[in-house]
Amino acid sequence: MLLAVAPLISTSQIRHPGIPNPVNNTNHETCLLQASALINAHNPDSNYKATRILWDLCLYDSCLYPFNKVLPLLYKIENSNHQHLCDSLQGIWYLIGRGTSGYGTLSDPTPQTTIAISHDSARFYSAGHLKRTTTFSIEKTSAETGFLTVNFFNIVFSDTKEKWGIRLEQRSYYHPVLRQVVPVTVTFNQQPGCSCGCPEELYGRR
Image (cartoon, rainbow, N blue to C red; front, side):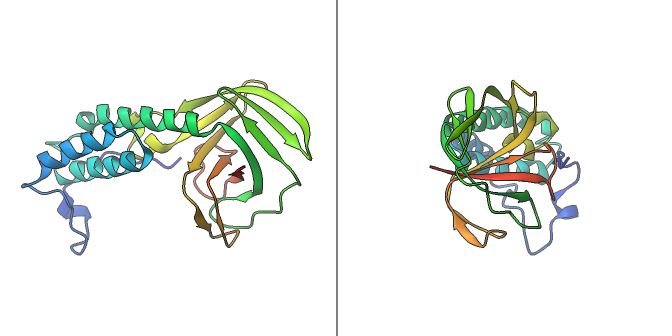
């Protein structure tokens, strides 16, 4: 499982001279205030920027900004991202492809494979026929384990007790395997914690 651990060394020890830390002795207090303001905006983009700032604060001075000092802010980011995911997940999603992350190919999907998601239930369809109905919950992976995990969540299905990793992309982007621009997508990783070569299904919004 890929985890980001709070740094315990100085900026000069790990950063390339050509990539200076944006946090320094003249702006570190302002940066902390900026991170708090970004978190209060309650949107994924602001949360991402806030996470980067908190990371840089720890790199700037891990004694002045130890991990346990920024952890309450990471919890806020995680809670905000969790709520956004739960709200944005609702709707009808159609299967774009399935395969492995990081490399390989996504196979052509089964025709008309869709998932209709409401607040806490999911209905799975194939060729227009209902195949499965189940409730689910969205699990946090705990900000205590590092900076990256504020963006990592799992979906747990009640009927089979299956646990999949889940990732939501809110913008259109170029998919390197499909070699095309895809719209808003949700990816289900069938091996939570796997970071490369994972069995995945990619769905688009309908």
